[in-house]
Amino acid sequence: MPPKRKKATVAQVSKAALARGGGSGEKKSKEKWKTKSVGGSDLSWDPFGEKTLVRYATEEEHTEFLRTNRYSAVNYGGSKDKAIWFATVGGKYDAGFASSRPWRVNVEVLVNDATPLINFESDKFEGEAEHPSQVIIKENEPGAYGIGRKMIDKLKPKWESNS
Image 1 (tube, rainbow, N blue to C red):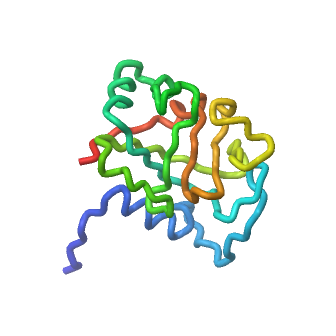
Image 2: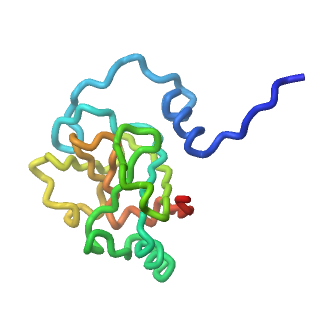
């Protein structure tokens, strides 16, 4: 008789898939990421692959999302124009504030050469609100992605309790 298996959470499955090469069926490359120009400036971390992203959201964000049924219309950080920031599940970005936020918002995204990335350190970066159709990455926040307002609803954010 085979041994009983424990059920895995979505986060555990996502982390395992990314460790195997992003869930694409390919083995993870043994080649280490070297600093490359991505989105108009140097980046020392690899932003590419299938990603499960999570955002820890406030009660106010959730209430506004329910009212409008659009994340793009939510007032976040005093703005309805700035990018909405997510972190890679199982990634290096430390969301130390996570436990104090009542909601978790998840999106699945494939970041590849066709993804319109803009690097925060790029000369072309004009502020979060000026890049609504792009994904913002930062050298100092590995695994964090700022999703532009014109893109966020297309990713079909899924809300769940953070308790």
